[in-house]
Image (spheres, one colour):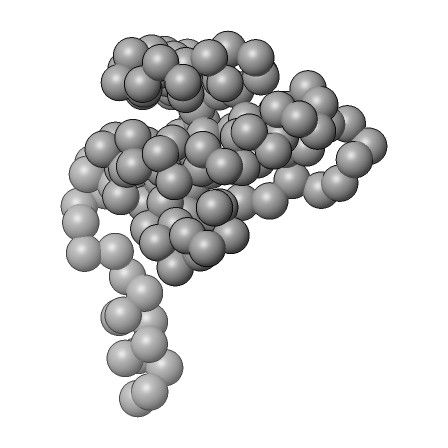
Length: 131
């Protein structure tokens, strides 16, 4: 009897036509890339002048997936990495407008450490790290 209850809990409650496709198509991938690009443009447009200057000196992109929107910032050198670290609260505040579940992934210069990731909702918990 327990097996039937578990099986019923795992059964989708939507009709098959309303479920997501089992495979992502090329068109789906293209639309997702377009979405990422548009979100990136709006995000950048909403940044203040200082953040725009910092981002323009790095490589960055927005990636969306089923779980969250992720801003990926790749820093060219340690100095820019330090400046971006100090700007994380402002960047997060701007990114949060697009998704409260957004994340920031900060990548140090090549061969100078591992990338780290933080949710924008967690920034206030770690504010002392960024000052």
